[in-house]
Amino acid sequence: MLTGFVNGNIYVSFNPLKKVEALIVAGDKIAYTGSSKMVKQVIELADGELVDLKGQTVLPGFIDSHMHLDELGMYLNMLDLRGVKSIRELKRRVKEYSKCSDSTWIIGHGWDHELFEEKRLPTRYDLDEIVYDRPVMLSRICMHTAVLNTKAMEVTGLMKMRLAGIMLGENEVPNGIVKEEAFFSIARERFKETLTLDAYEKFFENAMKYAASKGVTTVGFVLCDLKSWNALTRLKIRKSFPIRVRVYLHPGEKRPNESSMYGNKHVLDTLKRLGIIRGFGDDFLKLLGVKIIADGGLGARTAWLTQPYSDSPSTSGYPNLGEDRLKEIVNEAHEVGLQVAVHGIGDKTIDMILKVYKNIEQLKDSRHRIEHASVLRNEQSDEIASLNIPVSVQPHFIITDWWAKNRVGEDRIKCLWPFKTMIRKGIKIGIGTDCPVEPLNPWETVYAAVTRGKYDEIPYYEDTRDECLTVEETLQAYTLGSAYLMHEENSLGSLEEGKLADFIVVDRDPFNVKENELKDIKVIETYVGGKCVWKMDNV
Image 1 (spheres, helix red, strand yellow):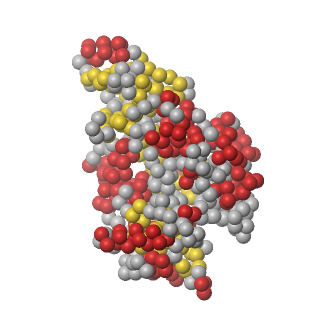
Image 2: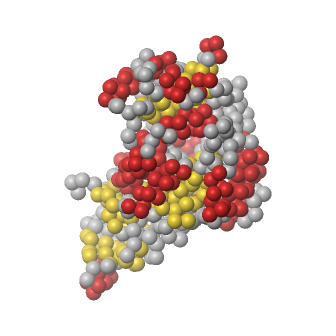
Image 3: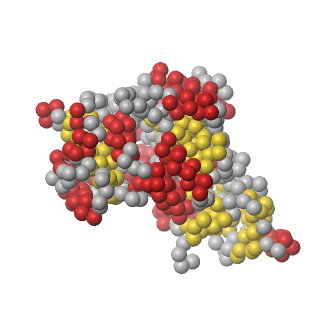
């Protein structure tokens, strides 16, 4: 069956910038791009279907190189705390939510204490005033910090533990604020244990439908645990996916008596015994590698910096694992035939990642990645370029982390998210959102990459305006760039003939709108493999 799309404003690729007015989809691939006249003739001869685009703009589907599909599904089913301006408002929302929720746990996400009028972090004592008989866990926008009420601290065992990520208050007693390992490996995992596979399947269905509605046709699902993998494979057997999912597993499942999030090599050992390597799966669900969180974030001051934080000179952050352990995991994954994606936000962490990566044979072919690279010194970008290491970046951090100049100071501000410098030096970058840390909507991310807070009163816009990307550069990184990061540039990322027919129809041409209007572009239809998987109502 052939389907022809005619009378359109169709962007086949962005570098080089190529436009046509029509295309043909055969099966699930692009068979032809060119003139409407030719498409009409072919479709008539083949007795195929003809779709009149009526001048609408068509783009390759967005490829989010770094997001958390499970967390997005949970986020769509939990208390939304984005934009909360005070602890008082946070408590009010939790109280209202608790009255209408009969769940065992009360889970929320998205608060940012930098916005609070109280100018402090919330504590378990704040939450206990509202809910004391059910565990409550509210994660910060960065997903590297959370606040738990006393009940949650007790059921997770965190009240009696002494880890670096458990913050202490008066009399050296835990105050309910947990960071990094205490949050990731203990609090969050304890909550996840209460969820069934059926619940996970519901999360993934919701998340994938939501992604399709935003024009995201492929996602890089990072830090996928085995329960999520099981749920995805079960779901895939029973139902077709609306989007494509590329999975990076957590490299080791924590056993009960192990305190480290990388306490053993259970997952890697299992994959090795089964002979599973990068590319296992099909066009819709595919395993690519493993994800390692080597440090934290700037918001919680847990990203590992070479020099102390400018607004907290007593700390430089810290790594989540040592160099020897990182080397061990990376080397084993490499030998197994898996791609590695290492989270590195602080420049000291990036030093450690580069030291490990540069000793790997056939590094370029493996495309082991760096995730975020938020604070990147000039000589580090030179080394990344020389080693051909691809990087997944998240431009919307610029808008959300408006306070970041306070963290890094005047001397390091030009090291903050240097996207233009990376492209100029030849570094292959792909764009992600880290959703639900940032919004999944690609147009908000495109807007952030192009404007860097010019219209949002971001304090460091003038300091870093030279790092603004063009629309063309941003869309290239968000499509073919992300495809390259996931070894998929020959099948995804553009609408060239022979590639999978993943594209979106939008309400206006991004090259013909003012830059401050980019975030307002709407997706009208989303096609994956030539099939419409989402359509805006009333179109």
